[in-house]
Length: 222
Image 1 (tube, rainbow, N blue to C red):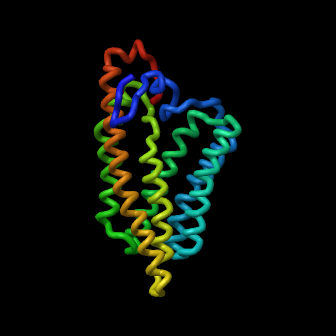
Image 2 (cartoon, rainbow, N blue to C red):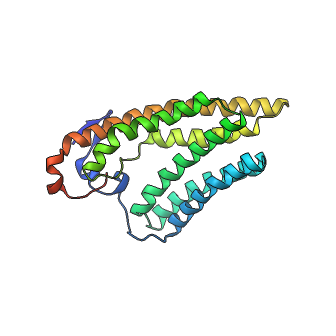
Image 3 (cartoon, rainbow, N blue to C red):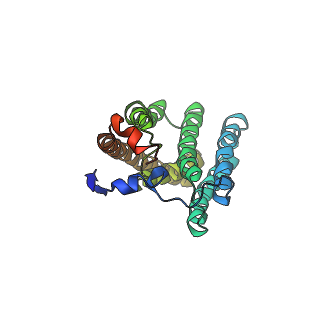
């Protein structure tokens, strides 16, 4: 067992399944996966409501439903033993798409500055241009989900709706907006921190599984 970013890193856990977590089924049509697909459909709906209809209330409702289904699909997957390889890919994918859609939509509406979009997008761009290609060449699909990554996603996905709700001029708007921005700032910091941890984990995987050993290892997922 090695230590990565201050935490034990078990090679057997690396070989377990997508995102380093055990899975129960290879099925695609499970209730948690259907909820994840519904979350993905909410991304273009959110952008349409925010940009085309300019309906902030319904846009926030979509975000609330997305956050609720994010918790629900994970709970049902664990409770009903329906954790799947596909579900462990869809869940973080939906989170990233929601964050990207919120950032772009808010920036177009002038709710957040474009530098914040670039700041958060640069984190994923850094990972995509450094460790992901090397992991793909070794047959790995993703990395173990880190608690800091989950905390960052939670702060961002719950902070941005508060920022949107707080766009008015009343006192309560100001209070909500301040709370929302506090969550966003903390979330942005945690988002980058978790990204650096993922890069450290990826480098450890690359070190343990050099390209010449791929044929012996076979195709696996972290």
